Image (cartoon, rainbow, N blue to C red):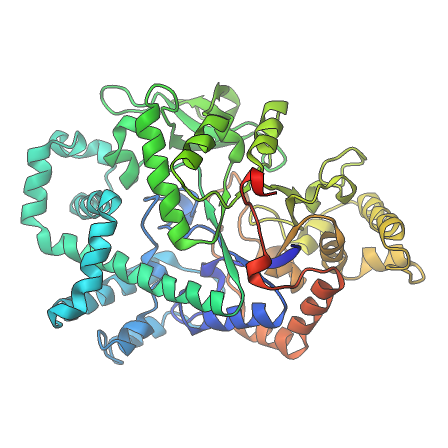
Length: 532
C-alpha cells in the first residue's frame, strides 16, 4: 500500500511553554495530518536530549524527555493549579526556538509538585503507576538511580563519581536507594506521566488513521544511564574507560567525517548480554512507535571505530557488526521488526546485502540525487517499491535553502532532470511553457515533493518545512556542528495562515493524485522480509 506522511519533531510544535510538547497543539497537528490525507507522522527520538541538545545522544535509551510533558494535563488531573502553571505559560509562548534549559528549569519543579499531590491520592488511583514500575523495572530502577546520583554530583561524568558508585558496588547502590527512596519514586512517576501522556496522544493519532514513525539512535551517550548501568555490553577497559568510540567517515553530510564519541558495543565478545539488552530496548521502542527507523543501519553490518583520544573521525577504521544474525535473534524471540533502515552515508556491498536480506525498506533522499551521475541510487528512476523517499531529512537543509545554495548550472540540471523524468513517467504532468524556468524560479520544494510523491517508493515522507517552502532558517540540524541545532519551532501564525490558504487540501490532492491516501490498517512499512 502506497503511503505518505510528514516529518515534524515534537519539539517543533508550536505548544505553549517554550518547546513543543504533548499538548492540544499536537492533537491539532494530528487533525491536520488526517485532513491532508496522510497516514504517517515521523518524529525524532523522544528521549532526553544529550550534548548539544541532540536527541541522538540519548542520556537514556528508554526514558522520555520530561520537557514534552504537558503541565496543562496535570492541571486537568487536579495535580497542578492554574496559578502554578502561569510561569510555564510565560516561557515565550511564541518563541521561535525550543529552549530546553529554560523549559526544564520550570517544568521539573512543577512535576515534583504534581508528584506529591499524586502520592497523597487514594491507593486505588496509584495501581497503574505501580504496574508501570513493575513492567519497566529492567531499565527504570537503574535510570532513577543514575538520575538521582547525577543530581548529587552535578556536572560530573559518572566516571568521576566515587569508586563505589562508579563501579556499581551493590552495598553502595543499596545505601543510595534506601536513603533516597522518595526521590527515586518521584523520578519513576515522572516517567510514568510521560508515557501516559504520550500513549494517549498516540492513541489519538490512531483514531485519526495516523501511525507514528519514531527514530531509534543506534548508540547511547557516553555519560548516560545505559553506559553506566550496563557496562558489560560496551567496549570498556577494567577502569571503565572506552578505548574506542563511535563516529563515521567523511560522507555527504560531513567532509571530515563525524566524531560522535559514543561507547561501542561488544557485539561479539559480549554477544548474549548485548543482544538481550537490545531485545529489551526494541520491545520498548514499539511501546512508543508503530514503525521504528533504525538510525545508522550500516552499523549493524560494520561500525566505525575511532581511537578515544582522537580529535578527528579520519583516524577510524571499520569493525564487523552483528549482521543478519542479530535480526534473526530478534525474530526468534518474537520481537517486532516493523523497521525502516536508515541506510545513508558510506555503503558497501555487504551493507546493501544486509538490507536486501532483512527485507527492511531503505531510504532515498532526493537532495542527494543530483550529482550528474545517472547511476545515482537516489534518482527516482532507480527506486524499488520497498523504500521510503524523502525530499530531505532532519540532517538536511530545507529544500528551498538547499536549492538556493546551488550554482545556476546545478539548478538547471535539476530542472532538466525533473522535467524529463515527468515527461517519461507521466506524460503531460509538467507541461507548461518554460517549465524549466518555472522549476528554477518558483517553488522548487513543490516540484521535489511532486517528484517524491510520484515515485514508485511505497512510502513518501516530506518535512513540513518543505510543504511550507521555508528557507534555511527552518533547518533542524547541521551535522558535525554544535549549537544552533534541534531547536526550530513552527510559527503558529504562519502555519495557521497556510491552513487558511488550503494547505491540507493541497497535500491531500497531491497524495490522492499519486495514490498515497488510504486506510491506516493497509499501510505496511518496514514489515519483515517474508511479508514483502
